[in-house]
Structures are given as structure tokens and as C-alpha cells.
Length: 287
Image (cartoon, rainbow, N blue to C red; front, side, top):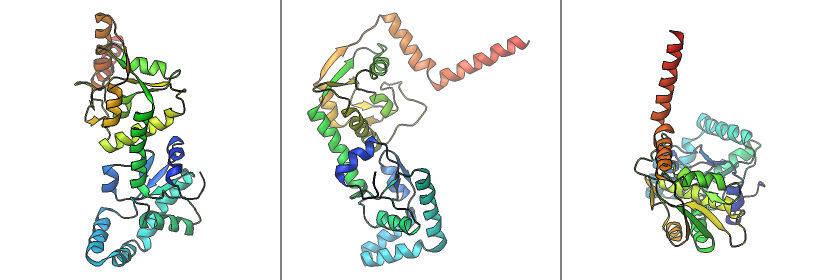
């Protein structure tokens, strides 16, 4: 990707190629939702952002910009610049963004340039990129076909998704949601925030779009609207509900075995129990 700033027409390539991103917004903004592949190295911390915002509201833009510069002079500026430089040198394709592609990313870009490093920013910032990703989900739901794998719990739907995705375009929604999609489906890692889940879903759809054959479907597992604490966007969920399905079933004994493997053995509790059993066996050998 060139050093020219990134327009909306270039966002698809940016996400498909997993371009490293520096989000220079304050941490409180980053935690509310960010673009996939981004790291938060803010130009203003939460308190500095609050003070600038208050000044903007009470005294106008010029006074707010002046205060912002005053708060990040000298060692503070150098510390933040050093963090950006370290990341860019480790990730030469880095792109910058703030909320609207305004002062914060522009100042970051300028300071990097003065330090001898030129990197592009996203025109329109997070706001335009977020809208692009939501439009991607809506457009995919309107234009593309889905083939939904459904059936009773324990039938091996997720396993089938993993087995076929080297041959057919297939999407593991539970992996994106970090949840197995049932009442007992919680994983040891925390789920993404709703906005981050939607953003990751959109990027996965962008990546898989090029693999779809003419009028061919994307294979997904049947899910309820909610996957743990996150939920599928309305357009995508309604598209799933109106798509063709394949019913997958297994004998009762196989389903019990699959459920035991997924919800007991392949969990933190199951792994801990296996380690304890292994330690007990080693102890018995030494006695």
C-alpha cells in the first residue's frame, strides 16, 4: 500500500491484506470499538481528550487545538512519537486513523514525517471505515448466497465447517464470536464487544468473497440471533433464516460423545483434569 492517504475505495484492500493500523484515539474510544488489526497508541490520553473537548465546547476549536499542543510538548510528545516509530519500524505497512481522519491523525502523520517516516491515514477515519464494514455485511446479505448447516446439538456442525472450508468458502461464526453458541458454550477467552464482533464478521466476509464461485454459496453453521453475549446483525441473520439448509445428524451415541468432547474435554476444566490425571499417573510410576 502506498504512502497516499487511504480513501473509502481502498478500504477493502486494506482489510483483506490485514494492514497493521495505529488507532490514535484515546483509550476510552478504542475500548468502545476498533478496526480489526489495530493497536491503540493514542496522541491524547483520556484526561487530555476530556480537557480538549471541554475547551472546544466552551471556547472553540482554536483554543482546543492550542491546549492540545500545550499538553503534549517536549518529553510527552517525544514519548508518543517514539511509540509510533517503534510500531511503524516493526510494521512498515502501517496506516493511521483517528475518529474522523481529522486533527489527531493528521498531527500524528506530520510528526512521523518530521521524524523521517511517511505513513498514510484513513480519510474519514474510524467513522467512515466502520460504516464501510457495516455496509459490507448488508451488501453481502443482499447479493450472496448462504448454505446453512443445521441439526441437533452434538451433530458435528462446527467440525464439518472446518473440514469443508479448504474446499468450499465457509465461515465459523462461533470462532469470530469466541463462543460455542449454546447455554454452556462460554470459552476461557472473553468475547469481543458487539462492535468488534461486527467489524470482524465484515472483514471475514470481505476475505471470503473472492473465493465464492459464480452464484455459489458461503457455508455457515446455523446459529440463533445471539452467540453468547454478541448478536448477529439483523440483515445477516435474516439472510440465514431465508437460506437453503443442510440437516446434519448423527446417532445419539455419537452426539453424546461429541458433546462430552466439546463441552468437557476441550475446556479449561477438562484440560486441568487431564493434567491432574497425568500427574497422578507419574506419581504412581515413581512409587
